[in-house]
Figure 1 (cartoon, helix red, strand yellow):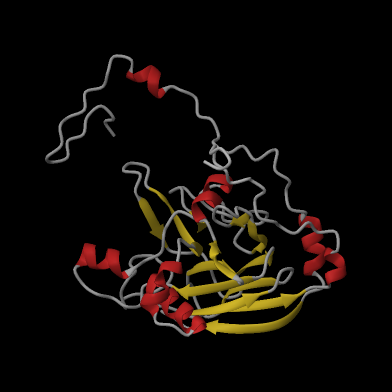
Figure 2 (tube, rainbow, N blue to C red):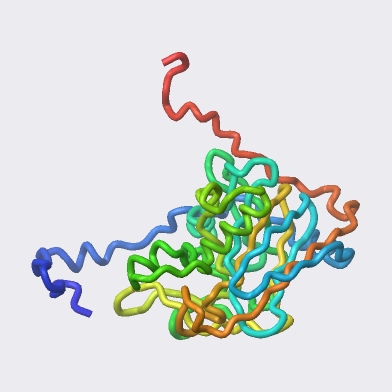
Length: 297
């Protein structure tokens, strides 16, 4: 790829300056070095996992979504049950919908794709772990030759607004719509009254990356198979919503009825609480929130 010029129609060519090579040679620095942050005690979580008893499960139908509630300290799994299928996950504080999953900060802290030991962070001003990934049967996948990985925090969720803009048609079973319907049913409201609470997702089981030439977001067939699951430990009381994406395994398309789709299962587990008696539960950020303003100004 020629980095010195851009030949797209209507755009002026970009002529590189004489010192372009030295500018490009600048060394990268990690934006958020996490070495000072305490890591979750995965050994304690593993011990707790061995005491878990399933207390509830529900099925998320294909091209639809369902809500679920998880108490702090419980575990929950998203499970593939019939065929390759990806899901879009939203999380909120069960007592305050203004606190919700912040995919952008999770991405900045942990990377483009998450796995066991990573945490799902909430938005500001709370900025705390909402859940910790305790187990992932697809952890073996890593990154493939295309740069694809599993469980991304890159994509935003398929939605009817973008679909209308790009394709000129209305489709009501995109993940944004599915999540809106599910949350509306939970809150006994209309979808249009609650859709502003729907937010950027964890793309569960989805295999994604950026192309090496144009750096565009891509998806490819998910390696998930029946029996695979990703598991989380709830750090606060959670309200969750999961959409079984209309893209199926996202090997080719989404935002239509073209792809073969399958349901997903959510399982909720109660561990022996005594095992977690030493666990440090997450608290909202201690930042004073004055943002440089003088008191009384």
